Image (cartoon, rainbow, N blue to C red; front, side, top):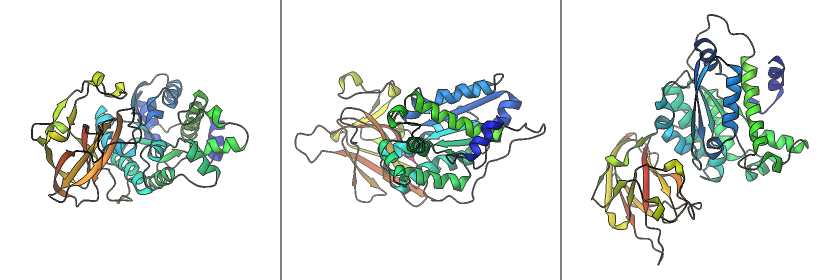
Length: 382
């Protein structure tokens, strides 16, 4: 363990900023632990997540662990901030949360730097507000474009924004993306060996090893007998007051509508496009141009929808507080053959007060197009 601690201290890609002892106290003294992982497909897949879980079981063989897989393929940090409550916090006390969104904020959402910050600060600050004892670790995975940027001396935009948040909140991180670049430069690894955007076992093992280094370096010394948990650092002000740290779902079943929309489980077998079993059995609010208007009221600064956008995904027109209707295209470049999960924002940076919203699907401008559908999993409100 001491050897691992020394190695971690000299590894520039294992970044300790504080806040990892509460989970250790829980594991060692109370002999229970609830660990959650939130992210995209890299988290959802059989990859680094089960490896880290196995390592924790080995470190604490007498501790009863519960592991929560809150990874959903294709989702970004915006979706993560809005679903954190339902998919993680509602499970009870979380002792240790692992977060992974650098790749999807980059390649799927293609967020601006501010967009990346709104989502990551939304997750981190929300955790600090609602579960201040929880320890956090963020891992930055990598895709080919991000790797090329690092190799040319640049920091990928999603990682730059996420790191700004982590410094502000004193959250530890694992810079796997740069570790991969460093090892490739040293001739110790190839991109093919690592495995690509969705890493092979060797790539996932590298991520797990770096996380192990981080935790081992902080858990090497014996805990004092009378040590108690303490609330994690919460800055008085967020970096961006519009960040989604008050993000939540708003059930589509609560919206007012003209009667043409249906809140039901779609007949996926008869709808063109691939469908992921993650969403099997879930009710969605489904509509088409003839469905009429949909409306609801909310309190907050931002509003949008978490949707499944397939090959037939259309255009929603949205009016906030009676203002002019503006279009929101639900279709994503990955929608061509897949009912793709994504969060679209209708309005952000609103005054923090009560607002009304009206939505309607419109007929597409292109002749012959079949992109006329909307399938809403949840409305999102910040």
